[in-house]
Image 1 (cartoon, rainbow, N blue to C red):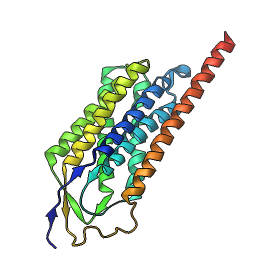
Image 2 (cartoon, rainbow, N blue to C red):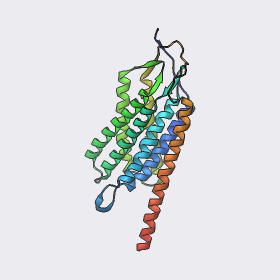
Image 3 (cartoon, rainbow, N blue to C red):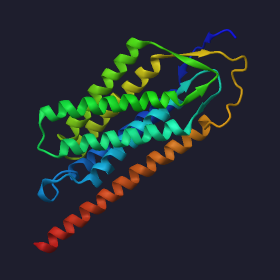
Image 4 (tube, rainbow, N blue to C red):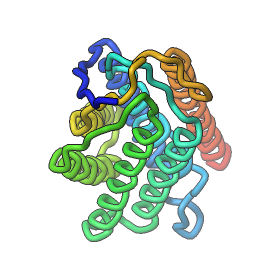
Length: 253
C-alpha cells in the first residue's frame, strides 16, 4: 500500500475552546496555590497541592490537549485509546502537584524554580506526546524533530513561568492576567507539537471505523464535562476551606 501524506488544518472554534479551558484551569490553580504552603510547622498541604495540580494538570494542560486534538482536522478516521488518555492525565496531575508542592515547601527561591520548572515542563511534554501516541488512525505520524525539540523547550519555559506566576500573583486581576499568559504558553506548546507531526496514510479506506477506540465526537463531550466539573470542584473546595479558616479566625478573635 502506498503511503500518502495528508493535508491537515485546524478548526479555530475548537482552538478557541481549548484556549479558554486552559485559562480556566490556570486561573483555578493560581487561586488554590497560596493555600498549599503555611501549614502547621511550615509543612506542605499536599491535599491542596493535589487540588492545584488537578486544576493545572488536569484542566489547564490535559483537557486543553485533548480539546486541541479535536481542533486537528485530517481527512481520515481517528480514534483514541483510553489507556494513554488515563495515563497522560495521571502524569499531568502528579507532575503539576509535585512541582507546586516542591516550590511551596520553602520560601520562593530561584534555584528551586530552576529545578521544578524544567522537570514540570518535561512532564508536560511527556503527557502531550503520550496523548498523541494514543491517537490511532490508518497510518502513522512523520515527526519533524526540530519542531519536537522546540515544543519541549516551550513546555519547559512555560512550566517555569507558570510556577513563577503561581507564587507572585495576588488578587483577581493579576491572576486573570497570569492565567491568560499561561493559557497562551500551554497552547503554543501544544500546537507547535501538533505542527511537528505530518499524517501519513497507509490504508485504502481512510474512513474505516476503528474498533475499540473512543471516537472524536464522544471525546469532546467527555473532556469538556471533566474539565468544567474538576474546575468547579476545586474552586468549591478551596472556597469552603477559606470560609472555614475565616470563621475560625473570627471565632478565636
